[in-house]
Length: 249
Image 1 (tube, rainbow, N blue to C red):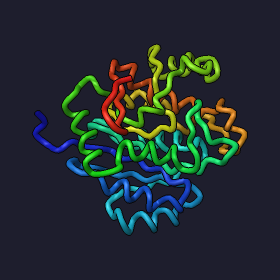
Image 2: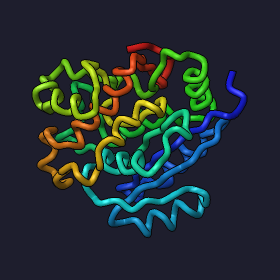
Image 3: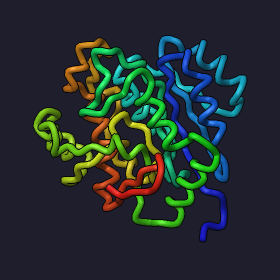
Image 4: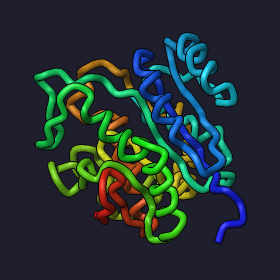
């Protein structure tokens, strides 16, 4: 039994400032732990910092380049934090509204903000849901990460192993033949597996730009979307669904 409160590193990347209130409402449901909140933003950094700081005066702000969607900012947060201080990491980010032409993800209908809402609500829809997720991680050492189970995907589907050249990236971070990840990259996970990503320097990775051509799903951000799940399973952990009842992968 832990003799102190769990320590949680919370990363929120804000690309769309108009979603700040939604994210702050979610963050307000974090309880029962010592949370350190780190907010990243790029061109809109001052606007984001001004708004967020009024609600979260103790949070840390990091200005990042506008590349790599939410993956590059997360790597920067990992780089500047001593992960051994934390038991868990929560990864969150604003997410664009899906247009009619792109309102499915691997066959799941995600009109408007549904994908964002599902991902966030699985973790932080209420204080009770957050505490339930935290307790499950505390009590079950076989659990590595919790998120929205309907978006738990496998790299064995849709030819992802080849599309993303995952063998090369597994080797770079010593990640074995694990296959599962949370599509949309929002989750609550044990912190120490992410130490592996501190071997490299985020600025040495060519993330290209964030222009729509990257929706071909071959860019580096989508590679890391998968790696952030694979590293958890590589440690022998399982995933749980925080949406309703707990289900393993």
